Image (cartoon, rainbow, N blue to C red; front, top):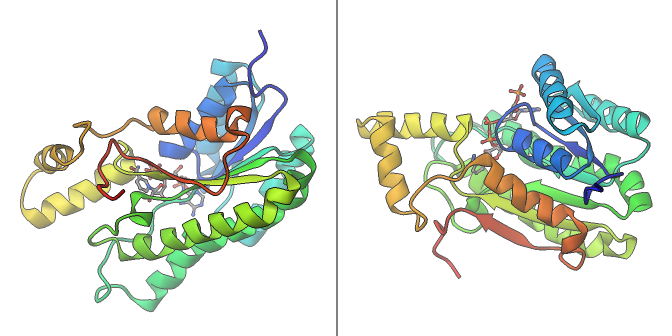
Length: 261
Ligand SMILES: NC(=O)c1ccc[n+]([C@@H]2O[C@H](COP(=O)([O-])OP(=O)(O)OC[C@H]3O[C@@H](n4cnc5c(N)ncnc54)[C@H](OP(=O)(O)O)[C@@H]3O)[C@@H](O)[C@H]2O)c1
């Protein structure tokens, strides 16, 4: 049976675990061939092998740091060489360091800029000639901080809103090429990143991380953290032809956590 993304090629950044991994799996389960990378190259290769074993599509695992322009060039080149084109780019990276304005150093700002904003600028630039050929889709993974700043995550609050601004601008500029650009903003999805942030906040409050999680879940209308697969399904929808008239949007996947309209 034909799958909806059969014949498509996706590149998913920062995908050896967490949200990126779930997105790579979801796109593959819809039939796309998938390239993915992370700094730990063996972990990326292992995920690619799991994807092929579970879904039957071709998958390519690569070693790359999103902060390294040469790595990103190599990833896009190898993806296109292996699969013959590129239809879907999912931008993702590790989270920036936590901290308030007064605790953060200039080096932290520079690092977060390169990790969470410049990496997207570079990857979109590298993918653009191929996306123009395919009329493809770009997804930028951001954070609920694009709608409501998160206390203690100053760098996320600043860089992610930059990502939202970039997405909206790209949506306008690339629409004539048939390229759609959307932002997906997770709230609390159960991954290692969220677990380590919870642990740090729990330590600060002098409670266990389990107790901290219960407090946080109480302010989420759906009453729980999300699973990576729940976010991945939304990303796959935005990449799919079912969303062919959707561009320039930012969507929260947060169980109703953010209260703004
Ligand atoms: N989970 C949530 O609810 C949530 C909410 C808001 C925002 N976010 C953001 O969404 C992004 C993904 O979060 P996550 O929860 O999936 O995190 P995670 O579980 O920590 O996974 C991060 C992934 O990114 C890779 N990575 C980290 N730094 C990288 C780099 N410099 N270059 C290439 N790959 C890199 C990691 O592999 P290596 O270590 O091998 O590189 C890993 O595969 C983060 O930016 C996070 O802040 C997540």
